[in-house]
Structures are given as structure tokens and as C-alpha cells.
Image (tube, rainbow, N blue to C red):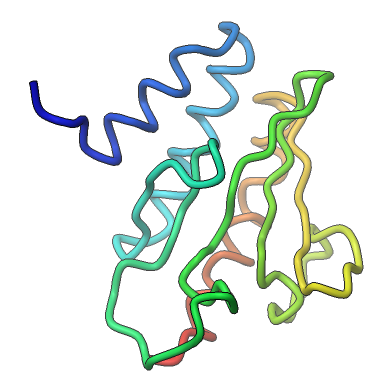
Length: 135
């Protein structure tokens, strides 16, 4: 039996969640992936993660420049989207939360309705992040 593809691994991970959480995770996944064909997905840090798939200038892997966003499932069922290099984004939407010295920023999504309310802003910051990539 062959190893599942990264996309299949994400699907399997989401399928293990409660129905409401899985529905929200899948909806977030679709919003992120529909933002650009240059976004890929895999499991990283035991969670669904999204990254830039194109060519990039060389960089130190510890800078996480390829990593766009990683899910962090909260005990209350909400999903925190962690942008490891979110501080580099000029967030004109105000959606990014936190001011961490390591440069990460967050977006918390509580459910499908919350995602619908944040979809446009979320896609805007993802596009802003993609524009910053040194190709």
C-alpha cells in the first residue's frame, strides 16, 4: 500500500474531527486553496498546513518563508490559523491578531458563519503574503 498524498493526509486528518469542527476545517481549507493555485497543503506540526509551492530565492529553513498558515485546533472547537511570518504582512484588513516577537500572527475562526464573515479579509492577507515572496 502506498503512502497517502499530502492532500489525502489532510483529508484524513480533517475526517477524524467532530462533524462541526471538520466542516469548519474543510471550509477554511477551501477558502485558502481557492485564493491561489500557488498554495499547496500538507500535514506539518501534526496539523493541516498551507505553503507556497512555487520557486523561491534561497533562504534559511528556520525563517519559515515558504509556510503560509497552519491550523491550531483550540479546546473550545475554534480553529486558530497561525501565520508564522504574519508580521511581514501589511494587514490593511485588521484580521491578523497578536504581536509576537517571533513574527507570527493569528486569525481565530469559531465556525462557518465566522469564516464567511472573515473570508474576504482572510483572502486579502493571503494575497498580500504571496506578493511578499522573494521569487
